[in-house]
Length: 495
Image (cartoon, rainbow, N blue to C red; front, side, top):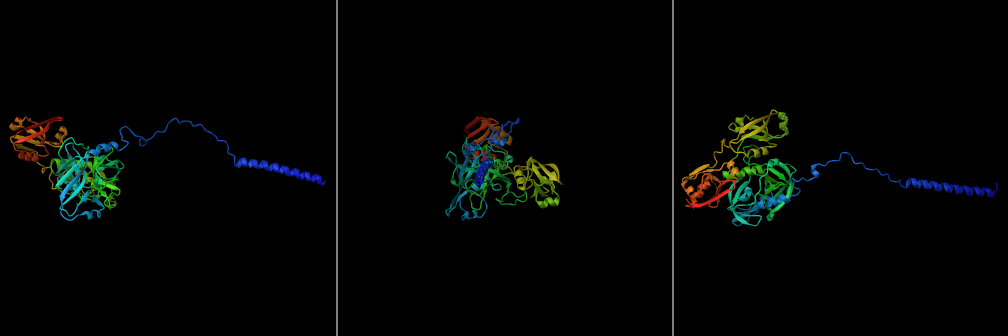
């Protein structure tokens, strides 16, 4: 082969190699870099569409904000200032040493008078206000400021240090007021509002949830290991922000119902640190009724010594029940002994209300008076039982015999204190009914079955008060009251 032909084949081979390399490069590019065309799939709607739980919806019956609850509760919460004579040096330094401390503003100095402030809740349209005992303790002058900036003097109707509650009153009518809710139905996780006057910031609303129920924080003095201890602590715990000045204010649900009276905070600084505590409304209502009707609290007792259920008790007695109050002893003069309650029994319910702890049992039983009958659910040797127990007083009295008089005869007329059923019928929190008008009342136009709610501008709460007001009135009196629901009447005459 000559040189010319050899050169041709070399050039041709080089050309074909270049062509082949180009084709291979194109193929590799397509393989590694060029995307495949997209494939689209038509979505076929399923025969059954998914449903959503109620937690993703709002219903017409459930509020979706706190606005309405705030509108209802703000006008019914008042600002209370109390003035009192100082007994000694200020105890302000103690405030910061106690992690669980009542929270009301206090401004003590070396002057002979001190001042404290807090909150209160209007619970009736004629001026009755629920608050904490420590807000009005030792006060010789009370001043109440309302949502509309009116200011009125108030008087103390009664107080109960064992529950840290007090009832005060201002003169007047047609006050906005809160309705009591059922604190037994309050659930952990439920939204709540705290309404009060913290740090002199009047009419303040904060929101939170119920963090726990039945809390005993050892705030009040007394023996809490046995039922014979008089102090009651079974607080509703919330994380709604409260501070000094909120004491005595309202804890309300999203419907604006009163479910508790704010009483304490958990704090090592004296300011809000995450948790606050409220007295349940069911207990508040009973204490207010007692203070109004009797001037003191009439509390029923089971007559047992109780303790919490612990792992040691569970192991020792082979218990299947892990919540309730374990009875360690029974007083022989008590209603519990009469009904057959025994040491080793575990109380789990009282009148249908569940008992999870000793503090809850104390709070539930304290709603009843001596002579009241309650149904108690117990477990005895892990078997359920029901017992009917008639409560007695702390000293063993079986009736509210220590209460104020129920009737009286004055100046030829007979009067009787209204029964709870009559109060409900007439829709009045207090009053006395005329059983026999007598000559003087008839001459003034008053007939039998007239319910006297006021005498010379003072609300009538007891027979003793009626007697004193009549004695102090002289010959001329003005009576206000009603014959039936909505049928009001007023009389002025010489007696």
